[in-house]
Amino acid sequence: MSFEGSHPWCSARKLYLQFGNEMHPGAFGSRGTAAIAALCVVGAPSVTYAQTQEERALELYEKATTAYGEGKYREASDLLAKAFVYDNNLIYQYNRILVLQANGDYAEALKELAFYADIMGEDPEQRFTDVPAIKTKLESQLAAKKKADEDAKNAAEKDPKDRKSTRLNS
Figure (cartoon, helix red, strand yellow):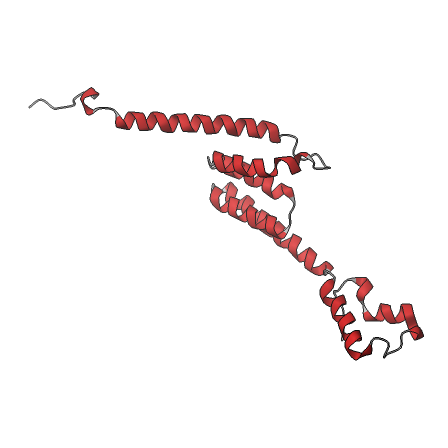
């Protein structure tokens, strides 16, 4: 049985080389030895698996970039959310907030920003220093959108008597 792909410290070969003759085949019993081997395979995350997760996230990010370029903002937002599931790099959420903003989903963008703002502020690489400015802009955009919606609603509800007649003379 091969343990290739599992964490290096769990390989059966390494255990044998490290302990050599000190390991008696019956020291743990056949069940105990099998249990230790199973823990090594199942308990340790595979480096290959982690790379696959990051690669999948990058693939989704690239698709999101294409969708964004084509003006498919909702699709780009969904792809970035999926990328974050595969790789919890905050850059995916940061870009998702920007995509939501581009789509005019200011309330949803503010909700996401409120959820991630604190942890983005603690980023050791200081990649998200513009989050306060983004928040301010989103708040003003949301207020302007609400006002425009309210103005449109008021205009639609105006009394028909106030409108000028456009009858044609016969």
